[in-house]
Every structure is written in C-alpha cells, then in structure tokens.
Length: 395
Image 1 (cartoon, rainbow, N blue to C red):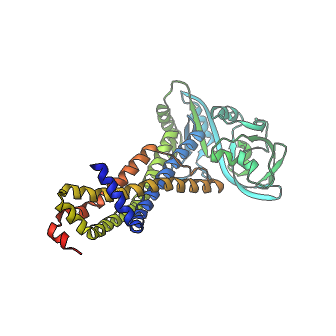
Image 2: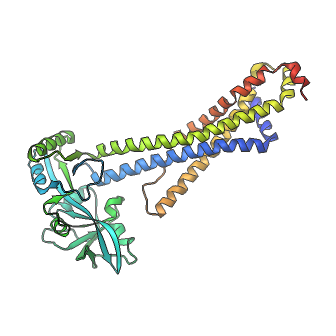
Image 3: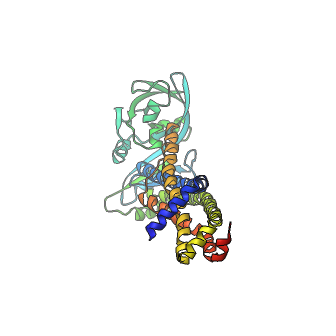
C-alpha cells in the first residue's frame, strides 16, 4: 500500500511540474549551502590539523605571550631561556628560532617573505625528526654566516625566475648565498619561508639574544604534559615575568577546533534559514494542492479511503519534494564545495579542502525527507478534516 501511495505522489508532482520544482529549489538551496559549509569546514579542519602536526610534530613549543597571536616581532624570549630549558631532566634537545618578515630581492623582483633564523648545530636533526628533506644543496652549519636555505614555493613560485642552490638573494639589503632548496613539505609555513643562521638573523634584524620560538623534544618515556609543567615551573623561577606559553600540537588544535566549530555552527545556522524557508514553501505548496484536490479527496473518502490514508498521501507528497531537493542539494553542495576549494588552491590557499562524509550524505537526505513530511503535517491535517459532502460540492 505504501508503494502505491508513493506512485500516486509521484504522479501528483508530475501534474504540477512548475510549482513542484519551484518548491523543491528552496530545499535544494538550503541543503546545498549546509552540505558545502560542512564539507569545506571539516576539510579545512583536517588540513589545519595536518599543517600543525607537520610544523609542531611531537614537540613542546615555547612562545612569548600566548596563543592569541603569532610570535613574529615579539622580543620576550631569550637565549637564556633556551639554556634554562636544556638543563631540565627529560629534555632530549632544544631548537630555537627567530621569525621575521623581510623584503627579499631576486632577479630584479621584490617580495615580502618570512625569514627564520635557525640554530646550525641542531637544525639538521630537527629537520630529520619532522621528515623535512633537501631537494638540492646542503644544510646550514655553524661556520656559515650569510647563507640561506629556500622553501619549495619560494624557490619555484614566488619569483618569475626560479631560485636554485647556486643563486644569491638579497634579504633586507644584504646579500645571502643560497646553499639549499627544501623539498615540498605540504606545510604552508615551511614551504613559503627562508632559513638563515640564527646569529645572522639576530644581527640582521637587530634582535641580539632574542628568539621567537623554542621547540623541545622529550627523551623516550617522558610524558610531554609532565615536561611542559617542568618547563613552566623553571621559567617562572628564572624570568622576571610569566609572559610566555608552553603548548603541544594537540593544545593548538584544541583551540583552533574550538574557533572553527563556533564559526561552522554560526554559518550552518544561517544556512538552515534557507532550508526553513524551503520547508515553508513545501507547506504552502501542499496547502494549494489540498485546495485543488478537494473534490478528489471527497471522492476518495466516499469510496472508502480512511483518514489515515489521506493523511499519509499528503505527507508522502511533501516528503518526496523534500527528498528530491535533498538529493539534488547534496550533489550540488559537494560540487559547489569542490569549485570553491579548486578556486582557493589556484589562488594559493591550500587549506580550503573538502571532506566527503558519507554518513553526512545519508543523514542529510533522510533529514530533508523528514523536513518535507513535517512541512506537510498541517496541510495533511486540513485534508483529513474535510467533510465528504463539502468536498463533493466543491467546483
């Protein structure tokens, strides 16, 4: 019997194609928006997590201030802090970095690029831990001064002419010999920056003994949470202030995810309004349908159709419109998300990726069917309340 009701509903929709499709479009737009936002939001969340893990790895990070902003330009962590951390039991090794932006000149072009000062004694080991490899050239060594290793995208995409390990570049008006090019890491920060010796960076940017970031690798068997607590206690004793933050990759992700979840919830709430408007469209369409089919409903009742049969037919009519809108909305939602992601990548923003969530597909389609049926409840009740005599008199 239910199958017969579905066939009858399909025939009813075919009779009023224009009105049916105009109603369905409202559900399509609402579903499309929600699916696209979820696909892009989840994809971006996954991409950001991947980026954080590539940069932070399994290390603690000590930065000035807090996680509320980048460490670039801050001057409240020093080499003295680095030496204090090295003395803490359980520390395998410590890496320190000085991060700045500078005007880079190459082949008569100028670009503003991130420049990272690194410790020549430890950077090779640090790179090996993070699986960062050279495409050509060599690593920075302690005897180096004005030398640079170039990130993959800086070498290949930033300038009209590609940079190789035999070129020289100008950083802030000073000449640097390129001694190496990094392979692509997939990290936006690493691939889009230049590395130079730490002491050279401190002189270049007039930040003697200053570092922007400290990373700490723990010995095997040492819990990072315990080590973080030890670092905090040590630095609180040896510094004049508490203007620093110690965190892990997971703590960064927790904060980022909280922010992204809030943004995603707001956007989906806004998108849900269009789905609600689509549901109102279905309700209005079903009221019109009941009005137009008044005599038909009266004949069905006269021939023995029960109120539950009439009620079910109207609900299935509205549910099918929601279902069709949901299926089309999901397809076009992912297509729309793909086009946005593709356009973002062409523009150099690789974090805006999409994630295919198959449970989301299923629940969204079922959800739109249910939304359609809910929208048809009041018209269905109205149809049930119609009296046979009044229906048969209707012209």
